[in-house]
Image (tube, rainbow, N blue to C red; front, side, top):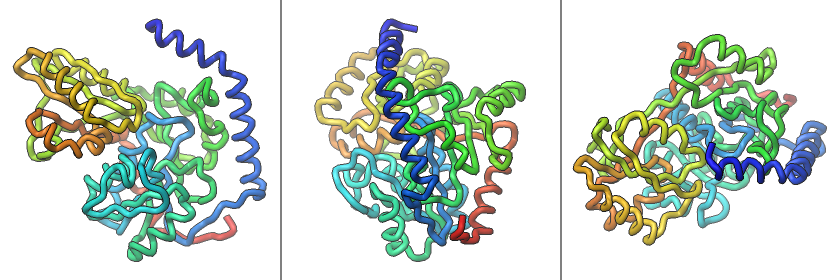
Length: 361
């Protein structure tokens, strides 16, 4: 543990009074929803919510993509996100001219990878859902991205993610910890997924984590690990790069939790250099010049620039500046451990197939 990490943790402990106040506000808000003083709307329509109790880094975007790939061969689906850090307000439906600045980087990532589905952004899901259903009346299900804590809409299937190395049951409220919601809120979910697990996680460790999470009897707990695909060129997806132990990589990364990615590169490459940016960073020309300068300093013959899919949608606008650079994008996906992927898939598809509206719930 380096000095910066120790300092940051010590500083966050000093903010405990603020965390207690924040936790009290969250508790009161949830209590008001539970007692019906604040209202939650339910739709006579299948809504699948993907969320977490903490800030960033649990793998929500890859889970949304996993669900899209699972469901779109069978159902007409759409996604609805907040569109964090976009430059617009209100409801926006992606089209062929849309940019990340208009709908946000995660929705733009979904739109780029799945142009045949309806992808929309709206800060208020209660407003966005009717708009999306009007624009795409043949939809059979909507995936709500990062909406678990937004209780104005009650989804029929809630999937809560928690990271293996930072379980919500071991965490505390912001700013001392990373929680933006209380532990007991997880009881509202039908599914809990522990993400970014070691590939060789054993059954004993699995049971220990389940005991720590204390799920309800009717809740399903699954475990996933990160599976990386072949990097593809940011402008030419057919141009793929097989990473080898002789490669030297410049990692350009602006995501909430880059640690697993860095560990992957440490194991797979000869050397990697990093240029870290804040989560959802909007890249500028100055950033591009710094990236090019840093890349030119690498003397190796086998060298590349690597970025994430979320960062790529914020970089692709620099066509002229990046055209001559070997910039590749590293795709990731969830891989279910303990041969439980099929069970999860059947649970999700069964929810849509057997959907029945119960307004009294």
